[in-house]
Length: 137
Image 1 (cartoon, one colour):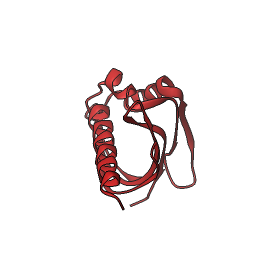
Image 2 (cartoon, helix red, strand yellow; image 1 turned 60 degrees about the vertical axis):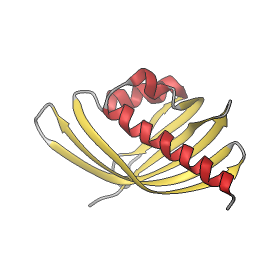
Image 3 (cartoon, helix red, strand yellow; image 1 turned 60 degrees about the horizontal axis):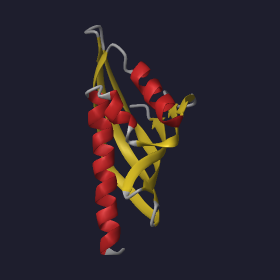
Image 4 (cartoon, helix red, strand yellow; image 1 turned 90 degrees about the vertical axis):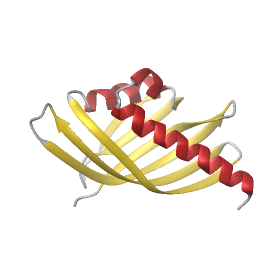
């Protein structure tokens, strides 16, 4: 691994940290800028299930915003396995744990793994695709 790879990996870590923070703070305009224009998202709400999470920057943002409507959330991404696949592409797997409350009516804890693809555009890393696989616990 080259030193430049470590710098790129750190930039991707910062990108994913912003993803979680801006999502939890519901700062949707800033959140949308983390994605490529043609990004894709899919989501596995439970083992054996799947859901299309939207296509395109606005579609993905709308899906996540609507999924968290009426909720307070805290998402944590851990233990990233990031691979730089070219000067402008990368992949990663992130462990996820989240804590959500819905209008004080209940608490939801989730866990799983994000499988992401990234693209570097005009010197900035963006999320090209993200797939969340739920894990029972």
